[in-house]
Image (cartoon, rainbow, N blue to C red; front, side, top):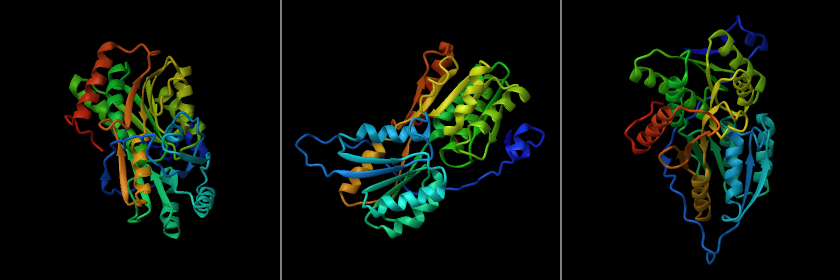
Length: 346
């Protein structure tokens, strides 16, 4: 059942007066995410100035931390000077900061959030010698100095949704999404599809409730979403996407429920409740961007990470007592998706 918070008028969510945001992203030709070879000590490597603009903190255990950590891990080998502007969830403020970095001649500006798409589309033509990257979406807007990147989060979502359906005793799952766009929507859809596949294969019924809070950053809305699932729908397994999931994870921890994470390993937030996390690894596509920029190509390519190319990995939490049979089923699905034996619906 796909529900929108604004339509749950009888619930406490309605009191928040939520105005749901909508966004769309276009697809373009995908580039391979094979990692570029590390530079040898004898190679002369052109240093690059890279700016990261992100909607949340660099230690959010979610979206922003995945990109920040990737850039930091490549700082030495790729000879990077990195500047970070975090917690820029107000798009107009972020636009001013992006313009400032571009005016200072940064080689690459990474606008890490689907909400920044229109800003990049407007600013990139004004700075043709600066490379811009944004995600998660597939649109380069036909601009020669814009890279786009996506995460096939539906793949890990499918694996975890399948396991969630097997774990659940009530056979009711709660999925808290932020805004129905980009990797957030893909994850929600993939999780629900995985749960449905498990129910079909094992001949039982499962209900996967979906709610979008309308915010990537509001922890309280995520907490309210999770509480509604638990108290009203009797969900005993929860999941969600975006940096605001800390609110929902808190509910899972206090109510002793299973949680499935995405974007980053979230087991530190609830060591006994997190079953597994889909973790993003942006290193391969960043290396490709750096190589392209050094070769004179500033954009017009889209990169996609997934289970098959190592850009996404499922990390199981040893602190959660997961049935060996269910874990084995999850690992089997990972292999089948990686090998192309299963095509996860989008």
